[in-house]
Amino acid sequence: MALTPKSDFLRVIIERGFLADATDLTALDDALIEGPVTAYIGYDATAASLHVGHLLNIMLLRWFQKTGNRPITLMGGGTTKVGDPSFRSDERPLLGPEQIQSNIDGMQQVFARYLDYGDGKAMMLNNAEWLDGLNYLDFLRDIGRHFSVNRMLSFESVKSRLDREQSLSFLEFNYMILQAYDFLEQYRRYDCRLQMGGSDQWGNIVNGVDLTRRVLDKEVWGLTTPLLTTSDGRKMGKSQGGAIWLNGDMLSPYEFWQFWRNTTDADVGRFLKLYTELPVDECDRLGALQGSEINEGKIRLANEVTTLLHGAEAAASAEATAREVFEQGGAGGDLEIVTIGADALPVSVIQLLSQTGITASGKEAKRLIAEGGLRLNNDPVSDPQVQVDAGMIGDGLKVSVGKKKHRMVRVG
Image 1 (cartoon, helix red, strand yellow):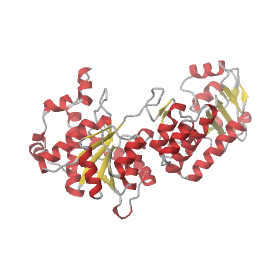
Image 2 (cartoon, helix red, strand yellow):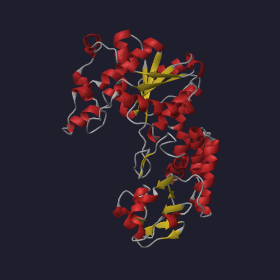
Image 3 (cartoon, rainbow, N blue to C red):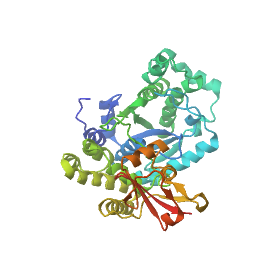
Image 4 (cartoon, rainbow, N blue to C red):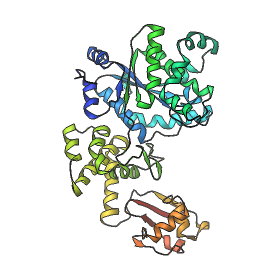
C-alpha cells in the first residue's frame, strides 16, 4: 500500500479512506493515467432498495466517474438466483424472477442520483443477460476447469462457514464461479478491467482476476473498500429500527437526514470524507470540533449526504423540521405520518407505540414509559394504561420517545 498515486482516482480514494486492498495498485495506477478505465461493482437484488451499507461503494463509483472513468453498475439478475454465501451462516431465501425484477427496479432508482448515465458515461447492466442462457456442460468445460476446489475452500468467506460446520449448498458454492465469469464477460464486451467491492468480496474478485488471465491472457485488477462499523461497534447502515434504506418510499428523507444527524462524535470526520464531497481539510476541521460544536459537523454531514440522495430542498426541509421539533417543540412538517383507522380506536398507549413502529414490543414500551421517555404532543406520559381515542388524536398527535424518535399519528 506504500504507493504515492499518480492518478486522480487513487489519490482521492486513498486520501478519503476508501481503500482496503488491491491486486496490483501500481499497474492500476498506470492504467488510470494512460486513459479512461471501465470498472464495475455488482449488486444482487435481495431487497427492494439499497441501504446505507451500500452507500460507500456508490460513492466510490461516483468518484471513479468524477475522475474521468466509466463506471458500470451491474445488477445481479442472474446471481441473485443463486445467492452469495460470503460470510453468511445460512443460505439466502431463493427469490423468483418477478421478485428479483421488482427489486432491481427499486434499486435502480438510487444510482441515477449519483452517476451520469448519459452518452455512455456510465452503464447499467444485468448479468442475467449472459448467465441465464448458459449451457451447463459447456460452462463446466470452458470455465469450471479453471477453478480449484481446494483453493475455493480456502477463501475465508467460505472457510469460516465450514469451520462452524454450517451447511454450504452446491448451489451457493457455484456463486464465486458465476461472479468470476461476470468479470470475464464484461471484459469481453465492454473492456472492463477493474472490479471493486467491499472487502468481504475479496475472494470473489480475485477469482475473476485469475479467470480473465487464464482464459484471455489479459491483465485486470481488483480493489476493495473497508467494511465499516461505527465507532461504537455497530454495522454501518443499521439502526435500532432496522436498515437505513436509500429509497424515499421506504425511508423518508427526514428519517434519512436524522440518521446522519445522530452520528457518533468520533465518526463525523471519517464519514464526511467517505459520504460527502467536501474538501478533506474541511472534513478534518469539522470532525475535530469538540463539545456542542461537533453538532455543526453532524448537521453539515446530514445536509450534504441527504442533498446527494434526495436533493437540496429535501435536506433543507429535514433540517427545518428537526429544528422545529427539537428546538421549538413543534410538530415539524416532515415527520413520518402513521394513520390509524377510526374503527381501531381507542387503543392503549402501549398499542400505539407498537403500531407507530417506535417500539418493538410492549415490554420495551412499558420500560420507556416507566423511565419517563414518552411524550404525546410534548406532554410526558407516565401511565401505561392511558387510552388514545380519536378526540385525543384530533388533527394530529405527535408521539415522541426520547429526543430522537418522533411520529405523527392521524386518524384515517
